[in-house]
Length: 236
Ligand code: NAD
Ligand code: ZN
Image (cartoon, rainbow, N blue to C red; front, top):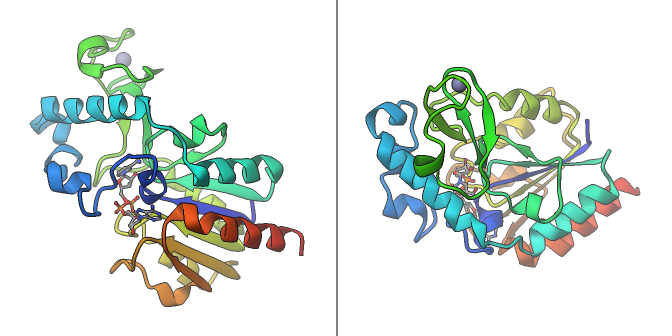
């Protein structure tokens, strides 16, 4: 497992033009997220949920990775054994930046899977509603490969494994409302010796006093300093 974990959220993709959830003009303001992205929503609000994610997929098609995605992927390729990128994001901007090994904790927008037999397909930027409503294998419903609120997230197992060996954590663009990353630092068994927090502003769900360095500015304006610190840590 890598000793350096870069843990990212919606904020890292904001400068590519993808809305975050909770910032001003975020998706939370325009949609009833608690109704269409919550466990059970495929039974109660199926059409709205499918449409919401069809729109997110379309929205991603023309979005480009920004400087932060590109620099982090460059770093990951240079130090594949030392650096692990983990994201709560469902977009494909790290992949567009050239990565093949980012851990997506909450699913991946381009994938859908069968609710019954788990058959998974990558539909790229297509619409699930018009093209792939039925599983080609068992004819049950297909659903977006997204972990909704209150659903189990199978990839958290991998997150916990990665965090066991983590010595240096860099948190970029997450409000901490979904995953409490502070807990990994507070954990008495943690090996974390160094930590950086980068958000636009303070979040009530993150205790910034736990972090060695706090950067409240855009990720693109912080990433050079972050990469410098990571390389210094690796080469020390
Ligand atoms: P969030 O919306 O709760 O918080 C966004 C955070 O990013 C805030 O702390 C904000 O200060 C920071 N931020 C905004 N712009 C920034 C910038 N330019 N540089 C640095 N920081 C910036 O996001 P979250 O904590 O990731 O939780 C939201 C959940 O919704 C996650 O599970 C995520 O997967 C999902 N989501 C994903 C996407 C995506 O895939 N791009 C978009 C919206 C929501
Ligand atoms: Zn099936």
